[in-house]
Image (cartoon, rainbow, N blue to C red; front, side, top):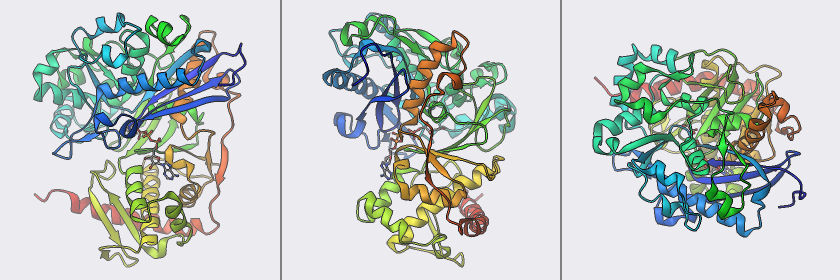
Length: 534
Ligand SMILES: Nc1ncnc2c1ncn2[C@@H]1O[C@H](COP(=O)(O)OP(=O)(O)O)[C@@H](O)[C@H]1O
Ligand SMILES: O=C(CO)[C@@H](O)[C@H](O)COP(=O)(O)O
């Protein structure tokens, strides 16, 4: 780490699906340090694949809560070994994969306040979780609970008007409801329920951290207009839920200072502030310094598309969250489950390297000679369909595509779907539109070129594909400055500008405007065929 000795440092963490990442910024907002712990390979004893366990029903998806704690032990130990100067950290914040829940066992709060710096966190907290396998965002097993919640709220649209989303299986209220109904003993052993984000903040604080407004919007429990838990939703999910969640707070709140455990074990300053942690997508919005009018496309484990919204527009598709940097505004988000893991599967069938995958893209034509593919290895959110479907230029279903056609069909299909559903959400690409790309796959220029062509807009990236960590470090800085009235955009005005990575091919408009119409019909057909016949 090369920060001048007197420079303040701001840290951002991201507890995402496949890894725990960290990024440090100096006070000029230059990136000083980036590191990560990959759950599958660095912590093989937890036997995760892509950071999760998919249960036998193929619908229940969990991650071992203790794995996230052990990942933090390992990450901080590695930073210490590499000479990271924790004493310079003025503030830290972080993010977590959205919707996942952590159930703290009775007595865990006391353990948090009395952590012995001689011991690893994972040793101290090994018995602290009443539900040791945390439900995560990939879970689709809570349909019964979703139906009950929508009924209690007065219908799907009414629930969306209250909480910003109709009932979604992965949303935390429905997951809590499932635990209450299927494992009541574990539920009654619980003294606190956190999101992954507030769980991670609790570790640094040495006490339970509040859920922030923005990540709290992904629970089907928060009334977006009052920014308080909705009684109707709480009561429909489980009894006595309000004290288990505690009051939510503004996403840029300073929650306190790091606890003595971190001061003694790693040399953090006692005055290092902990700013509320939030969801990874809200943190990415901060990291990209997204402006109204931009569209963000995150290509991580999930693919997400999100926008800055001034006014909430509740709908039956997509989500509205409270904006993480301007709490009077909102963000709209669409989430697609079949993102990077499907791209990896097709890569492995096409020679096994991103280079070969990329050359398949550059040697196949825009529009793929009319071939269209939909690749839903797991039950998709938008549309709610599963399976791989391929169609030729005459809309005849075919069993396979040649390798190069397959790679392009995957990418074009994914991005046409992202565009189709963004447009249904009211988003229209105009001449000034910037697509800001982030997430692991945004490091691949060939993928960004297809994104640019399909959206017919220039694609930009920021310095790190790790915008959730960067946004967390920005939010740590802003949390401190906000106390003197500084806005988020003023606090981070010196951050690096996004760089132009791809511009649309001159023929793209013609090709993809037509193809989008066909794609919408094909997707509708696949959706209808996926519905159970009555
Ligand atoms: N060069 C590349 N081309 C395409 N995808 C890539 C490339 N490098 C990494 N990825 C993808 O990035 C994914 C991880 O993205 P990331 O945003 O870090 O995930 P998450 O935050 O959900 O853990 C990997 O699953 C991998 O498929
Ligand atoms: O469910 C959602 C958003 O609603 C996902 O986007 C999760 O937040 C997981 O994020 P990644 O680990 O894929 O970044």
